[in-house]
Amino acid sequence: MSEETKPAPPTLGQKLGQKVVIIVMTGFVLMVSLFFVRGIIVERAERAQEVTREIAGKWAAAQTLRGPFLLLPAERANPNLPDSPPTRRLHVLLPDDFAAAVETTTETRSRGIFDAEIYTAAVKLSGSFKQALLDRSVLDGGWRLRPDEAMLVLGVSDARGLQEDLTLTWDGKEVEAAPGVPQGFLNLDGLHWPLQAFAGDDSDSFEIAMTLRGSSSFSILPVGRNSSLHVAGNWPSPSFDGIALPRSQEVGEAGFAAEWQISHLSRALPQTWNSAASPLPEWQAAVVGVKFLDPVDFYRLSERSVKYGALFIALTFLVLFLFEVLLGLAVHPIQYLMVGAALVLFFLNLVAFAEIIGFAAAYAVSASIVATMISLYAAAVLRRRLWGSLLFATTGALYSLLFVILRMEEAALLSGSLMLLAALALTMFLTRRIDWQSPVKPARPTPGGPASDAML
Image (cartoon, rainbow, N blue to C red; front, side, top):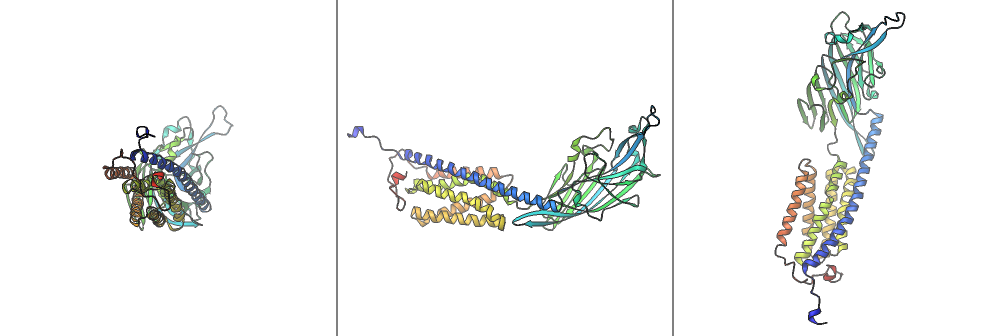
């Protein structure tokens, strides 16, 4: 064949472009593996939640106190049927002032490798009801109150958590509790006290004391016109939630303390109503309280770390690719695949170790194992301990950065994007003098492998 008909030799850019396509396809294969690893993590997290529910089922579920509500029956005779029983309905009155003092003692119960947070709360509720606050218009039309048949109702989301020391002091007198609430009243579960309301007085005071078991969270409905709530405990990592944040709070290793001051204007619940006009359902969400969070939810952190798996694979492959371009070394796509497989297994080992030794220790162990595997393999493939050590340092730096990013909830996206930008800038700087249009030069093959031209 004459020199005029010989095809032009491929340029470096063309050959490396083909290699990039193969590397990207390898990366997509590894992304599928990451998807399955994430599925395993989600499955383990669901199993942990199931065990938590089982432990709570033998102790008590998350508790929410709603009330107390003072229920005042009213009756009206039917003038057309004088011998028939009178028509009856309920009038509801909420406290004028309301105070709650709650002291929680939280502990961790374990089943196998799974944990659940349970607590015992010493609860004191106090306040007063004023008859003058009852909307007198609700009694128009011949209705007559029956305060001698009144009852005080307290909603408890899981009555199994109630202990035997429950007491109610009503105007200085103790009243015995009865289980359940009137059928259909606000769809509440809980208990009630039959009592005499406003016996010769316009105001009645109350004080409820109880020990309540629960798990995961505790919340309370601020039922007073003015509510003062105090919740404290020994859990070092609480999360305050509800319709309002605490007015003041203290959180430390020894525990927490929080106080709320809430007006009735901030909740979707009237101060008085009758059974003919029930409040809107939104009132049930108008609670404040605390969640007893695991300070390190390693399932959540592990799942978040998998989202950065593609970034890890891309940056590690980028380092190997730069070795090829800058040092004239040849790395086979199968060798890229093996390095990527080690990176994928890091995330699986992370959650497996974390269930036994905790997230931070599991992260250090898994990162050390994978970084050592990759560096030793790279040193053998590239025939230079120096390059293996460099890859170890690079991988270790990536794992360190990921650990920092996982701890930065708000700045995680910014940190990840800056990392990509820095990697791109470094790549542009290191390859700025490469002539991508020059013919391919033979590169040093990997040990026992074919010529580098075949690998590229």
